[in-house]
Length: 236
Image (tube, rainbow, N blue to C red):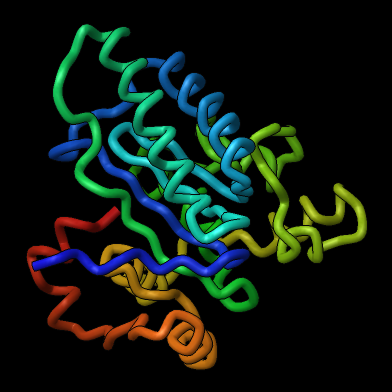
């Protein structure tokens, strides 16, 4: 069966996940994380993509990004796949596939879900038990968004800048919104929509995306899906 084409709308943010093959590690040392971020910055600039939030986990990557053109994010991820895999193969004298198939992505409604997605991404190391607080993890956008430590890769979205009229106000506003944990139903919705390639947003946003794309962009979130082995295997 042919794979459905990805959902792309110019100027609409996307939540992106790329996993290591068979859940294997795709980063081994600090230098690997640093190289990935450098090449991501280069690829984002080249292909006109704005990166708003990210986290690099041991065996997968989350991005919240907006592409200027319909193909911008796809082109960026292809460029990243080539450069980073080459780096890993040379550095660790390895061969074979680094990533697990195609990256997964979902269109994100800015007003209702953008900041929630940013928090979901930056809380990943806490949910994984790697750190007690998101600020303790060095390889995410939390330090830029919530601590004011500049990360050149980050382009601040309007939903973030609207939190305050000054940098200090935006940082404090973002930190005030940040929960210790996101509700399970929110986690389930984000995970299911991203893994299935559905849009993340309210009914109005879903209808708008269906009209813009001329195809169905969402499904029913059912308990059966969340209890299935396939869904559990995708939990992040």
